[in-house]
Length: 593
Figure 1 (cartoon, rainbow, N blue to C red):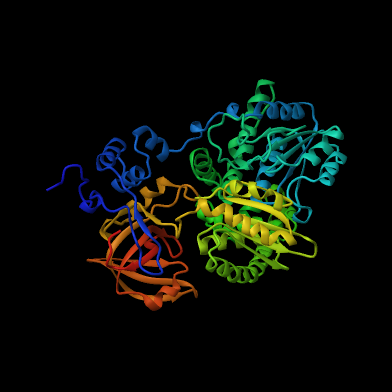
Figure 2 (spheres, rainbow, N blue to C red):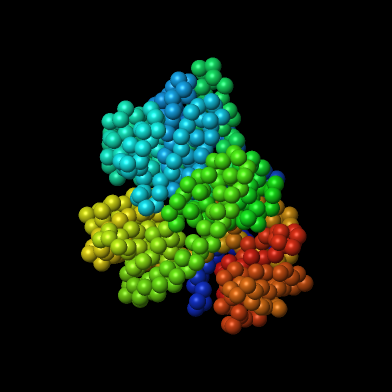
């Protein structure tokens, strides 16, 4: 008998209303099963002809209308909002177009992270292909964030009549003034939050401008750069000038957007979805070599995880250690030999970064533990001789370990220390930092990440102020709950399901990979692999699958025979395509999710 409203072949437990949350056992996280209306799930399945599990995930995540779901499953560039909705876009496009048509030298200057570098390369490469004249430079960490007066004057000496700032510029008033005094027009394409309401001497493309009507505020600078060149193409064509196709630059958009941990929603998800396809067939020799060094399968569309965990750190490494020009050359060079050498240098520097990070991370985690035990809502740790290039990564590790916003500060030889902060989804760093501005020399960033500098004698006061600001915002927050999309039997997991779930990607910040729960499964042949990982087989009835729990090796000593598991099914390509379960969490088989 089929219960009214149920999907044949799927358990009644899908449709039974359960408590929203259930406490996990000691050492685990809280599990929470997302709710979905059975009628909505069935309606989506029938209207779109999709897998019932996919329909359930969509409905549970609030995508309930047929048209919205159809667009979500088939992201297309035609769904993007128009560039004309962005404040400053028309002025920026016109000035860039005039520079191309009149043969002016355009200087492009960007930040030293992946977003800044990929933004620079995207715009410079497009102008080059359109017949424009360009000179390109990225910031050096030792010079500080953004454009400084010396860099502005340098670009003027190169002969630039137009300077475009990528992933910076919103707050660089003195440098912009220096450039304009030299007769250089300045355009900034930046996604960082504004800390003031004016930008003198600057054409600013930034979705956070109060007068910007573009509805999605989560674009990265490289996403904004794509919008700029799309708008520029129309300008050039209206003036009878041949213009290249901007879609060839989508590989860089995917790279910068994922590496910047931007929300993979709306425009970002569309751009990254198409950009990953372009990345798989990219013609940039340095980027292709970097993918080879990262053990990514050639001529295959990479995943957002591969971009975020394999490519992003390698491109970020030179800038973290001081000289981002190596990364710039890796993406910019069309000469195969030079591009390949730059990619290999990025790979070597990334290994050095790992070694430096390990030492700083160990010290920071110990200091963070002490602050957590004292009840601080915002962890701020500082260390002598910490490399400023790794404090952002260390701050992320603190957040993941202690489930609260955190900052790591590198103390050097001067009275000014440089720090980096990361946050949890429940707290906007800009809102927390603004009331602390009097304790910092400077700061900037967005909701999830920020950089700042502070005098040594104000670090303790800043820590206390950040705690006071964060505490009411995080009231009652402990460990973040693990959200589960559906309960499945292992017999329902197959390769078809894996392929269909792929339509919900790309996954990342703002669009997490679907996580499922299976109850009362039997653990067999459990062992430690690669020092930190748990490998085992999981059986339920007559069905069993290999499973891997990354960084779950410490669970081996206390592993129960019967488990409830939170997992993602996946096709593992390491030894040829095979189905396995990637564990997200596990607990003894007693409680229902």
